Image (cartoon, helix red, strand yellow):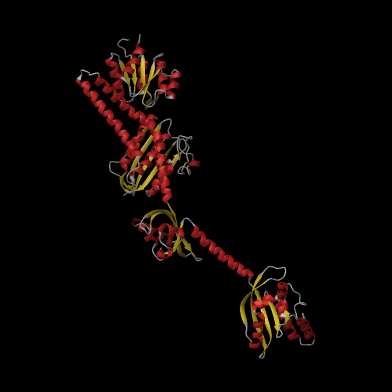
Length: 496
Length: 126
């Protein structure tokens, strides 16, 4: 205030220009968001701006003229080595820049400052040293928050149970999280720079590269199932999703890939498949009992006639033939059942002709269909329709679809099962004239455990298993349905 | 025993079953007629009066309770025996139908010839 008082006096003394500048500087000093102190050679404060007084909670009267060790806590002055620095500034015209200090004014929270000591020289003599304190508490806090957010994100990626990795636009691996390390056995350093496709099973590499090229053009790929090759050389089924990482200009700069280990799900699905088979067997049992006991009854009667030792050789021959034919018929039914009930020995993909697979599935259900007054037409081409697949799994799909159709027609109806070629696809269609699916339920029908049947009459697993199997065969399953009119399920599989 | 007219009606969509039942009865001198559908059976009962009917439980064109009702409608009082591999002897459905008088007996497939003959003789006693 003393300076400003002087400035006013000077202005009144007829040196208005100089006085105005001084006033302007004083105002500027007060407006600054930094604390500024002017210290003389006796280390006394000769000027303090408003920012300092507010931050330090001091008044001008108990600041101006005070020694620096009285304005700041002595411990802080010691810690900052402030007196020595000030003396060097006076003696050697030496500035101190960008030092950090922590200061807590009475009744206020701790603030962090960067301070500079700037010698103010007149000619060769340093008369004053300016102490400028910059409050950086907020910046530091923000920087800390940003770092914390970054660390958090990094730990999200590292703690994820899914595989999270990134590649450059050519598909070369940039980052590889802990889950990826754990599942593959490769450390991040070992795979960095390698093509992602090379970490996948050999037969799938072409598809992987193709998917990456699509992402590079700005697209994405969703749930592709490619086997990951582990360090010991094993194959692990993984569901992958990839998307482009773009910069502010919309250019693709990297590709982010997330993968989920399907090992457990495959195990679970295998269990579901088994339980579903048992449920299907329950449905089949009634029809099968009837169908087996008919030939047994005929054979039994024919044998009883033979025991009576009939005279007529023609009749005896007829009886023997009936015994033989009846046993044969019962045995074929049992064989079909066994084929259905036992998991297939092969679970690898191999060329499969869909025609006999669909024919067998239809034959198994034909008994039950007949019992329900359902007219069944099986429309099969004379030529084989080959796809890459697992016979027992495909049979399960068609079996489920046909059984569902039969169950949809408790009052009888018409069931058509067909196999045809359409372009590069094989299409297996199961059409019924049953109760159909309400429009609101169409989205649920492939969900596990979704069922419209009363408790105890269906597990609700059939269609979800069909869906999963067809997906594993790179195919699609579609349904069209009109409530009260019937449904058509179409399975599309890529032709070999 | 009745005269030339068929005494027993056999209804089964499986020709082998008709063959077996027909021969069992024929070898004991009992005349029978076979029908391989519900529709054919109903035509026959309109034309003739039977003293016994063996009906299959699972005909493609007829529900067995309904068939039994309509046979009895045409031939009042005729004993109807359900022949089936689908049910078992004390199956609740069978017991219920017997209690309600829909059927008068049940024969499980496969059967012994003596069982068939015992039923036929009991029904055909003058």
